[in-house]
Structures are given as C-alpha cells and as structure tokens.
Length: 249
Image (cartoon, rainbow, N blue to C red):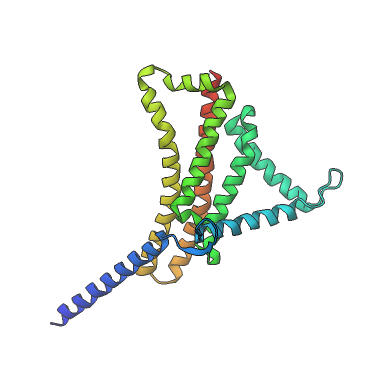
C-alpha cells in the first residue's frame, strides 16, 4: 500500500513537472503585446520588437562611444582594441568571401553582432527576440535577399536567371526551390537551436540540483548563443560566395 502511494505521488510530481514545462514552453512561444500605437486602427508592438529596439540602442550607444575621438597619429587603447577586433572580423570574412565580397562584410558583422547580443540578452532578464519566429524569419529573408542581390550585382539579371538552368536545364525547378529552402533553413536552425536550449535547461533544472544548471546555463545562454550567431553569418557568407562564384563562371 505504501509503495502504491509513493508511486502515485511520484507520478503526480512528474505530471506537474511536465505540465509546468509545457506551460513555460507555451509562454516562450507566445507573442506578447507590450503596447499599441493608436494609428491605422492600432499597431501592436510585440515584446520581441521592444527588445530588438533595446539591442539597437545598445549597439548605437556603444558605436558612438567606441568611435569618439579617433586619431590616425595617436590612437588610444580604445581605438586600438576596436581596430584589432574589426580587423580580425574583416580577415575572417574576407577569407570566406574573397576580395570581391568585401562590400558585404559590414552587413555580416552587424547581423552577427545583433544575433549574438539577442541570444545572450536573456541573462539580463529579457526574452531573447530570436525566440520569436517572426524575428528569425525577418533575419533569414534579409540574408537571402542579399545573397540573390549579390548574384545579380555580379553578372546582371539575365545571366543570374540563366544560372538557375545550370548545370542542366532539367534541375531548374530544384534551383528555384532552393531560393525558398535556404531562408527556411536559416530561420528554423536559429529559432530551433535557441528554443531547444531553453527546453534542455528547463529539463536540467527539473532533475538536478541548482549548482549544475549554472554550468549548463553558461554553455546554452552564452557559448551556444554566440555559436548560433556565428553559424548564421557563416552560412550567409558561404551562400554569398557561392552566388558570386556562380555568376563569375
């Protein structure tokens, strides 16, 4: 009888924990409206949009601070640090894109910085905007539009369109379908990894003491978040390089 009661109590705890995880997951997936702008019938501003504004404000303020009083003859420590960081990033992306793709590096650096901050901002009590599928869709569409624009810019509209028939005309539908698959893949990869990290963290918190989750939190909230930013811009740069190379043939 005692064993049956203990089993029932354990099952109840498991059901409660599962329901709690489901509720938390639904809360993370829900798009919450922070306020409404009273024009055009009311424009609802979601929580993810507000957090994105905060991130943009942080980047703008940091950019103003880091680029004040720049000097060619007597650069300060702050300027030297900034130049080293920018130089490292330029060197990395230039190695991927080549000389002809240097003009796309500022975009890649900006998007990588934004996603990196967006993924780790949860440490400061904000809900990461990358948990909103609308945000990741917008980022993916921006990148793929840039990829196709790079192809058109490299050779022109006619030869860019002709590239869909390469290497043989019969695979043209597949090449066209790839335009839609790429943003879908970028979007779901970023969204899925960020959300998956949240689910794993919640499961860890449910089964182990509080000390252990702190270690995993460091990994999922910081390291994994920065890795996802890296993967996103890395794949985008590869797509750009591919588009430029195809157009140069």
